[in-house]
Image 1 (cartoon, rainbow, N blue to C red):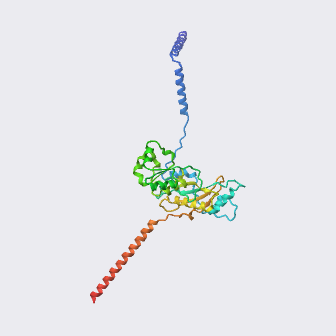
Image 2: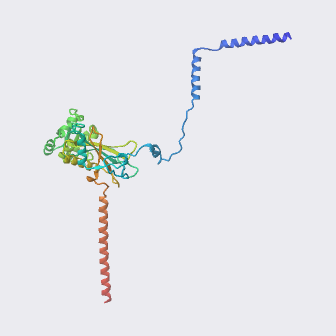
Image 3: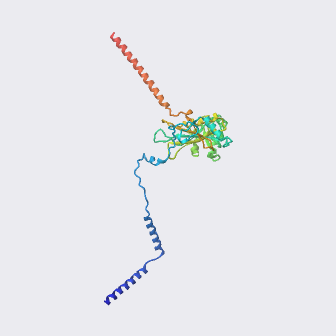
Length: 367
């Protein structure tokens, strides 16, 4: 019995000595501690559950509608609303009142009276809302920038320098009389290529077709400023082009980021101290210029026009279709139809004459 107890004690002592020697051989440096920290961080990251919301399959033609469900349609159609019977009403429940241009200008003059805003020379701003759908239903009109000719001048607050390229004494004198900042020909092109004259000093560049072969050398320097008929900077009528860019108004049409079929133009047509008829004529020329770029499709292009005058937030709706057609007029289609009808009538007349001749021949043969 005693021998068994002593043997077990010996085994315990040996085991303790072995474990102590094994512990002494272990490496307990800072590198090991750093490794343990990294492993702990990995373990913590594994415990964090990332919830991924699974979205079912959405067809390609329904994805935009699913995303844009909460966005409001910017095309305002209040034709279904009732007309207010008095002057005091909640606007969102009733149809927008339509003013004439003279009435809208008079309303803004009253709000800018010295007893209220005290700004009688405030600019008259126009908001033109567009339907940017192109000829195809899946296409949209690109953003565009144009210069509209104003029949009545006003201070637009911009310094515009116009550079004109042309050859011939008559064209040069015409451009100078129209108000061009600098007019020249081949010598002017040489000055620009040599670096003596900077194109950045001039906002607009206009050219006559007679100098176009020599002007091609500056295409790389001009880039977007290079004259072309589309931007109405290349033509034979220099005086009209110079007046347009010197006295006209520059406007841009931008599509909405989330609603591609909605476009907006914001520009100034004059000041409130101008004559009402002059402001109306400026508005008419602007609307005609905007309507000139409308796509060849059915429906409206200009959807709504509002007149505003800062600092007042009042917006007054006017009827734009007194100055431009509301719907697209198919002039070419009508010509084709008239031509086709006249051709059919001519063919019918020829057939009738041939039938009459055959009947007369048969009568002669019988006789």
